[in-house]
Image (cartoon, rainbow, N blue to C red; front, side):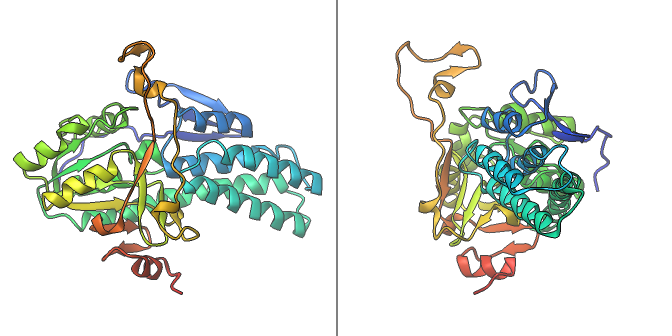
Length: 354
């Protein structure tokens, strides 16, 4: 087992009283700044504008944002529930692809109606407790997935990642990167190749930042270098997170994931998806039903404040793509490992076979 240097745990979200403080991930790795969100509107704006991102973290933040809509309410009235429905719709509109957001809002809305029916005199306080519980469950799920995922690797493995599925994307140690962290401590990972992840550069700005903080050996590559590195270096596995998994086990994740899965299959490299059960959306038959967010073309045409294309150029920016389940070696959830990857096994692992 490797001796680890002590580093301060990354905490992208902290609750203090009636507000959450989130790391502004747009400013990383240059500086670490926390932004305060104390209303549903402020929380939705932080999610929409990518101040915070990562499917599990978005869900946790949305739960708090929903709760803040009931600040000061001791006993809920029908008017309060209608107001919370509007707050929930505002939060849902902030990002359309990551289902954890919708899952968290639905759970909070269910809790609100339960408290209303019971005539609770601690309505707001109990909603905050529920949001805290969602965040705590994410921490536990991350740990469990890290343990399960690390077992899939042989000692001294070299792995590749895309986007950021680390502590910055969750309230715990991360999903895909959580596996890498645990596997490194066990001596099962010796080197990581994070892809830079254009156009938002989550791999270079965020994942590499996390790896370097922990002293995990890593070499940054551009997205277009992945095939060459797979061909010329020994890559044992690719680990990615997910924003939504359909009933047939197709996986939506950051744009570029589908291409990386095709490359992994062509080079005989295992391709693993790591995501909590809240990322699974059994209401959607297949990946083709998953809504794909189309973000501003400016994010492609500019890097920060600097244009990288001719004035007047046009661009597309689908922020996610869908990887067919046949290209996925296994899906790691906190409830178990889905392998082989198909809808029936997915339901069985989740305990929802029907």
